[in-house]
Amino acid sequence: MTSRSSKATARTSTEARAVARTQTLIKGANGIGTVRKTTLPGGLRIVTETLPSVRSATFGIWAHVGSRDETPSLNGATHYLEHLLFKGTGRRSALDISAALDAVGGEMNAFTAKEYTCYYARVLDTDLPLAIDVVCDMLTGSLILEEDVNVERGAILEEIAMTEDDPGDCVHDLFAHTMFGDNALGRPVLGTVDTVNALTADRIRRFYRKHYDPTHLVVACAGNIDHNKVVRQVRAAFEKAGALGNPEALPIAPRDGSRRLRTSGKVELLGRKTEQAHVVLGMPGLARTDDRRWAMGVLNTALGGGMSSRLFQEVREKRGLAYSVYSYTSGFADCGLFGVYAGCRPSQVHDVLRICRDELDHVAAEGLSDDEIGRAIGQLQGSTVLGLEDTGALMNRIGKSELCWGEQMSVDDMLARIAAVTPDEVRAVARDVLGQRPSLSVIGPLKDKQAARLHDAVA
Image (cartoon, rainbow, N blue to C red):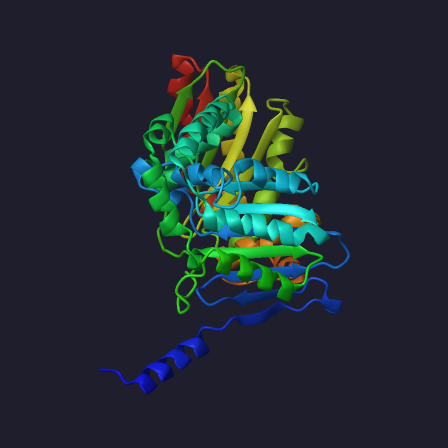
């Protein structure tokens, strides 16, 4: 039996631990670019970046859940839930939610990825309290009514159909399947017609309760804002909903893992009556935490990141074989992808694949010139800065950094890290990544003889 004084001591001890903890993560000159973080009792993290020179603010909530957290039968549940959180709460109808932001000229949206989901609103700085109240209400008070699930099912099926009608988009889902197979990273974020039709309101509610507690959430806000005011408003919104949870709970750690993707030499063809053949030739890349990611970014930029890149010059400028050709990287917690995309006439597909494969093999063996690397470093630095010129981009950066890395890096530090990449580092990562046997995904109207030759590109 515990005495009354012991209970009081325990309660006092708990209350002492359950206090908000605030840190300054990046100290900007005169407050500009200052990034601060407060962790509330219950594990909710709030990260802000101050930019006093603008008149807007973007407020977002990031959830530590994506399509890779779904079982096969739940494929598409994360994205379905993203839609449903706009359908109404105990305080607001779907119309009330949209009308509140429309009335002040604000923008509100959301997106689902393989490892996270984000809901956000961009408004005038004076309307930030409204944005905070609406988005927090959506995240904590969604009703997920059966009638809303049934109505929204039609909209999601139309979204799947729209994606299927765009082979230039669909081929990237096919490439993920080629590389990862039938597991969570290889399945489409939207789900399939069959899985979406099979999802019920009860299953989605359980998914919501499991993944949307405060320990799985990061609040991010950027613009002409005051950190302490944002913290007070967010805390009040979560307290009103009774959603702060166990005061001693700790935030969930960023994803980790050491899985190495070993897929090579696979070919998948999806026959479609399209005017172009859409191809992705690629191989395993780097996890987003890999220290070599900076060198990989420079390599990717030099290979297919702009009009002066090797692939653009060889495929489009010199030969006119494609209008769109580029390379890209996708980094996950434990693995990654590198891919080259091109859209071309079906009769030219083998020429395009041969040129792309030749360039990848040549760079793997010989590396890039110092001039190419220097140009790519400059291009990557410029695009990094230009891509952070609005409050939405800043909110994305700090929110994703906290959720995925658990730390923040200033823009100056990012630029310095890019500038520090050496030619030897780029050549080393080119050997490691491009030296692997590639896999291939194709969507288009290829004839039997053309299809049979696709394996030549990955031999």
